Figure (cartoon, rainbow, N blue to C red):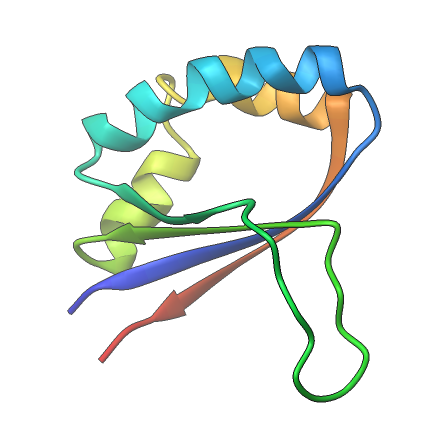
Length: 95
């Protein structure tokens, strides 16, 4: 069953964040993940939620998504993201 990682990101250092964007895709692909949404324009249809940047990743299953997040392949990119931005990340089981 697919699993999705939703990430709400507020970028504090755009130059450093560009480094993250260049580095992260290889680790995602190494765990059979793919970008579904990568920071495109969004419009709030109900409520007040308007994230500055939203990313959605798809993985084959939740175990693979967790393995990617904790992986040594993703660790360097994650460290850059932590320096360059504030984020909220959620793992959701698909159907």
